[in-house]
Amino acid sequence: MNKKVVRYASASTVFYFDSAINELAGIVDKSAAFIITDDNVYHHHQKKLKGWNVILVRAGEEFKNQQAVDEVIVKLIESGADRKSTIIGLGGGVVTDIAGYVASVYLRGVSFGFIPTSILAMVDASVGGKNGVDVGIYKNMVGVIRQPKFLLYDYTLLKTLPQQEWINGFAEIIKHAAIKDAAMFKMLESHTVKDFRKDKQLLAKLIQRNALLKARVVQQDELEQGDRKLLNFGHTLGHAIENTYKLPHGHAISVGMVFAAYLSKQLLDFKAAERLVRIIEQYGLTAFFNYDAADALNKILSDKKRVNEVINFVLLEKIGKALYQPLKLEQIASVMEAVSK
Ligand SMILES: O=C(O)C(=O)C[C@@H](O)[C@H](O)[C@H](O)COP(=O)(O)O
Image 1 (tube, rainbow, N blue to C red):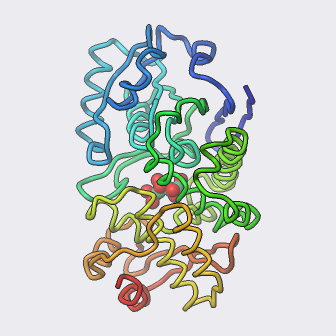
Image 2: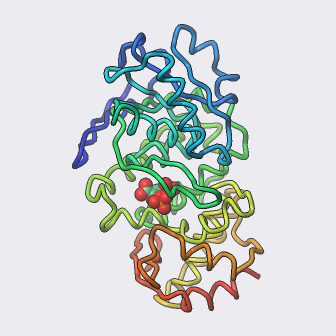
């Protein structure tokens, strides 16, 4: 086990990298712990959960909603969970979002930790404390920023992760590289998903590098007043099309990143839009998607980054260096017409 403690402004998180789920009993009191997981994860890892209190949620983004939260809360009440209980989210981003949110509001907040089981959750969703749910097709409209006490990384859990989910998770890794880490971008260009599936050490290093990259950004700006906004690269358009077209999150934000890259080309003379397209396609992600531009623009108006008629849009100056710029809807619209075709 490789332990790192990250101190944020509000609280600390202990990262247990290179760990294993059977080390959980040494971290939390089993009798006071409630593991929230979904049907799929439970089906694959049921044996490892023997003797633990388990609460199941339905798998899939369409179930990341208030109803799921209420159902979990009812089960916690029925099971006698109290303020000394610890909630553990075992799963991908949907599960960790629900579990972290439930833990933040149940009895006005109990402690929680995550055991992420997908690449996306390991490098992004479980890190940084954003936990919440969707409202209809609108992503993450309700939520909190509250840090987990711990994150436990067990890479053997990835053995059952479908190839599509591996691909999905690489979108957030490419995003991190594009906004903050040019050297990682270059390294990724010389690999494919297959290389990371085959080489456990390469994968472990990549996951730790990404989780800590994100954690460092959040350390500087936990409440998203500045640099944390950069982590939203690709998400403005991504969120606007994800649920409407039932796109996997990674594909939706890849389309969003490519769009943001062309916008950056026009506004900041960004030179590497085609390089971003290439790497996205190399990792099996979607660079271009034929969406309804007028509808997407309309949805962008409901984005959390909107202030009056202006959207704080994340753009690239160069690979490894992002900035955010307030843009009017008309500026976004003209590039969108061209790129959505
Ligand atoms: O943690 C953050 O901050 C991020 O923006 C990371 C994103 O990849 C993540 O999907 C996040 O949940 C999106 O944030 P939102 O505030 O736009 O919902």
